Image (cartoon, rainbow, N blue to C red; front, side, top):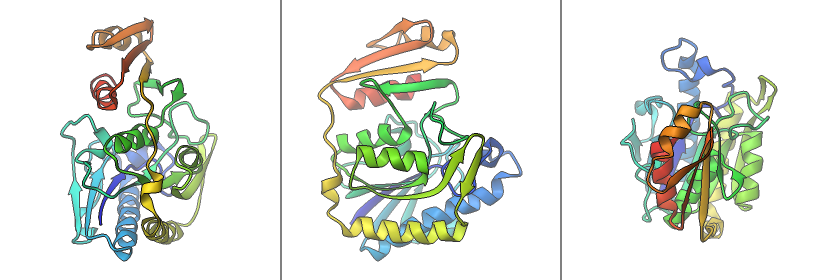
Length: 265
């Protein structure tokens, strides 16, 4: 069994302030440790379930957060950015049996995390077919495009609730709840044990039942904080500026939507 793990940091236990997500800030060290521990827990759960190969994408900021020496020997770590249209699931392909999301967070504009955002800080939001998109939705669609099911997610309560709406059979572990500019967190060790056990359970299930069906056509929009970005990316092939701060792109091919996000988000 071959498993892919995409890991972010804003949904890691305890992470509450942007300084805790920034490699250049002293506060980040403890939370890089916890991010690594939660990824290791996911790896251990996967190995207990029979995984023989695990690929881990460090998908936060510079892509250089996870402490590689602490991962099990079976794991391959993807650091940095290619860049690649698959973005946070770079190197995923149809040879994988399932995708696991660790440390994921609420979408931009949600009131369920003080760190809610989608892809980059220059955006207000992204929509796909009129649904406001999270990074989980964007990359679960990417996995489905490749025929790979999303089987597990950990992060804040908001993104776990959203995940169940999109993939009803997905296993979730909510490690915290966002309230205004604060978070209420479970104990870091409890998060680790729940993630390990949740991944083990997810991979013992009938994972293919988690594979969602993609829409036949995609209309994607990106709303920017500044009008200059909308003007610029309105020139991306196939896109158009539909108001001073928003660009729209349409395609029947989800990979082309991801290519649009890579360049325009």
